[in-house]
Amino acid sequence: MTLKNIMLTPGPTPLPPSVLEAMSRPLIHHRTAEFGRMFTSVIEDMRFVYRTKGTVLMMTTSGTGAMESAVVNLLSPSDLTIVCTTGAFGDRFVKIHKAFGLNPLVLPFEWGSSVNPEALGVTLKRNKGVKAVFLQHTDTSTGVVNDIQTLSKIVHEESDALVVVDSVSGLAAERLETDAWALDCVVTGSQKGLMNAPGLGFAALSEKAWKVVETARLPKFNFDYQLIRKSLADKETPWTPAISIVAGQAAALKLLRAEGMEACWKRHDALAAHARKLLTEKLGLPFYAKNPANILTGVVLPAGVDGSKLLADILREEGISIAGGQLHLKGKIFRLAHMGYITKSDIDAGVDALARRLVGAKA
Image (cartoon, rainbow, N blue to C red):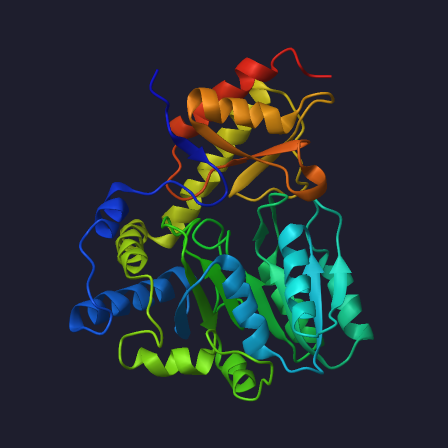
């Protein structure tokens, strides 16, 4: 039996044929006019996706590397920051802070819940001199989406702090308006809504953020925003980039350009609605997130079901990849992604595979 090879994981996600073709081409040198043209197209098209007229930087790294780049380029050792946590990736921002000797003020929310705007406002009122507030746009560990527009407005009303957003999983799937929402630094990765292979990180920065970058004193080298910005004029990166993945990103961004961001957001909204309707009809299990994002749906498994074995069996027997829970949710939920190049037929196949094994297993 031929396995399906369907990926319903929240990164990496499936790749369009044009992206696969672009990455399969012979390598070119990264200090050439040919690479320069490709580099320029990626930067310009990322501005389109970010909805910004500001500076966009490209780095060869993971999404976590992009998150680290924001911390080290915006902060100094004595800075006070707020990190709002709604899952594993808000917690990761905290860990990055602590790795560089910082002690952030953590504003935690129950997993499955989004950031409460009023709680953030109260915290800002009680803590003056906050340098930056770190937020998750979406969190794939729980499937929640945060109201970044409202949260950014509160930050700017109550403080002079920078608004720093991890949109590694949200960009190009959930609405995000970098300039209109006054976001100061938004980082992302290539392997989710951007429909590319893992390996590229991006950061979009406001002018306010650049003024802070110039005085930030945390150590950095590979992720030095000032060096990376300086290389933009030469249409290149300061270090050797992941050339084939840049080629793939150029191809993927052409698809997003042609679709348009409004249409892209509507497509993800429709995919999420389709997945949840199907999951409800065929499984009838509760969803995990109270404010679910369009990127994925987390589903609570019945008591007694070994989630890790369930998903391993589906992958081995049918070639369909579905993510399990992370940390304390391991084995307790599954996470069915519907972002990027994932299609309705992919979702149908995944839900059918789950239903064949779970019908009759509900508590």
